[in-house]
Length: 114
Image 1 (cartoon, rainbow, N blue to C red):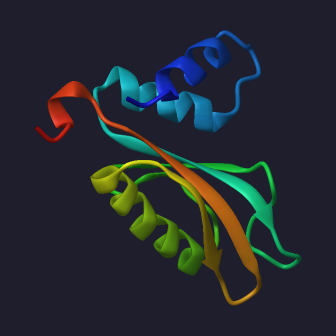
Image 2 (cartoon, helix red, strand yellow):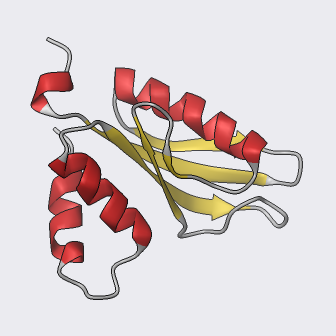
């Protein structure tokens, strides 16, 4: 079971909640699958920074990184996470540097596999 709703609910009460919190909450409210991507570490020159969050819904839309190649690599990983479950740490190479991310999928009850 995903811990994403438990993470998002208290953050929504914060007036200055970051956009990724709102997007996750919208997905949960609309009963849409989503994947929270957290950057655990990044090498110098990577297209993201440690602590950044990205969110992809089941269709690959959401709060995505600006670097399109990096975003495509993350999208592929989110599809795997939706199918197979959470990923605690995975390296994502890019032309400018490497990032290590975790992926936490959230499925609504109607979208989970039996």
